[in-house]
Image 1 (cartoon, rainbow, N blue to C red):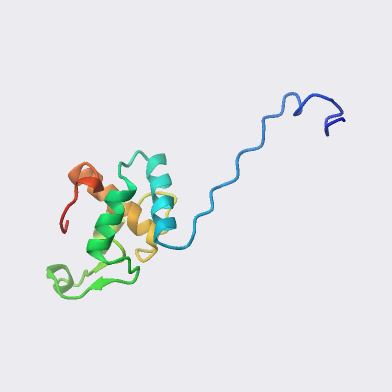
Image 2 (tube, rainbow, N blue to C red; image 1 turned 45 degrees about the horizontal axis):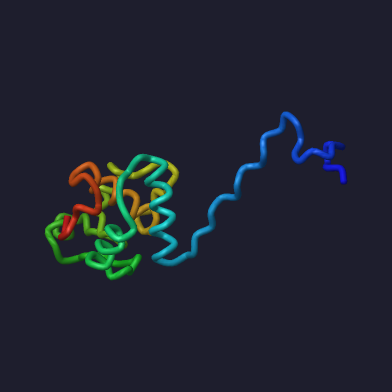
Length: 131
């Protein structure tokens, strides 16, 4: 049996193997966290699945459209939004390249919040209350 190069050897000499396919994440909380963790790893942002999940459950119960219209930030016109209740200025300051600029995007919200937490607390894993 000959391959596409006309050789019985596997692969084609001088050609690198094809890259692995990009991961596909489910469009749910588990998928958003795993997607965020892969982006965070590529950018050197620490955090774990459990630390992110714990904070999401406390901040929004997993509701991507959660918004706080009652705290001091809301009184100043910058309510916290999304899974990890990020305010617009923090999202803009800690946005990570390769993610959406939409604060409501669950992956972008997680990654920006984790980037902020890494700078402020060392990791989202170290956040155990509102931040």
